[in-house]
Length: 192
Image 1 (spheres, helix red, strand yellow):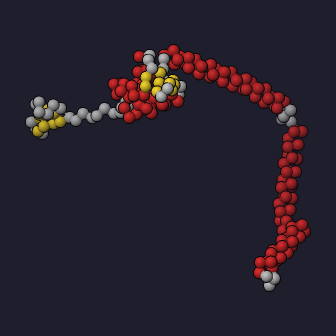
Image 2 (image 1 turned 180 degrees about the horizontal axis):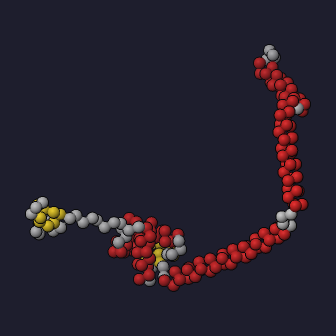
Image 3 (image 1 turned 180 degrees about the vertical axis):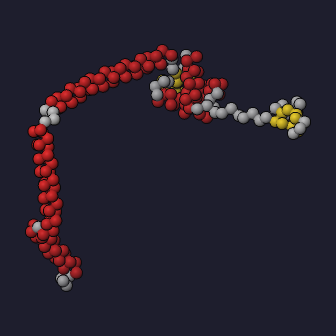
């Protein structure tokens, strides 16, 4: 059956064809790896046009090469430099090793500073606990504190109820009325 290469003949049901699905596209991470392979294998400098020609050989479509290379530049995996009117891209395996060592050093220093901070906080926590051991005297003081806070809140609420009858607020309202009356007379020609 050369006419239908992906088909077989089944005498009960007729012709049976299997359709091969198209290969799925590469993810961004896979495209990044493929583009890095181009740099590491050749260990050369490239223009963007050259990369757009080499990308499809590795399975990266031409339209996405620029975005993929830019993402590699943004992550410092590929270096970029403008010489004259041309922009050159390159990445060497030794550069990647140096970058990884720098990241490792930074993470190590972060871990050390976090350990120091943890030790400081542990010391501070133990120092704060020293004066706060449970005792009858402390419990009595805490209960008195709660009573005083409750009474304070009750008095604040009571003051809020009487705020409308406050002489200072009443006087301010009276002055505001006089100002509004004067403004109304000024705008209407003194009719009020």
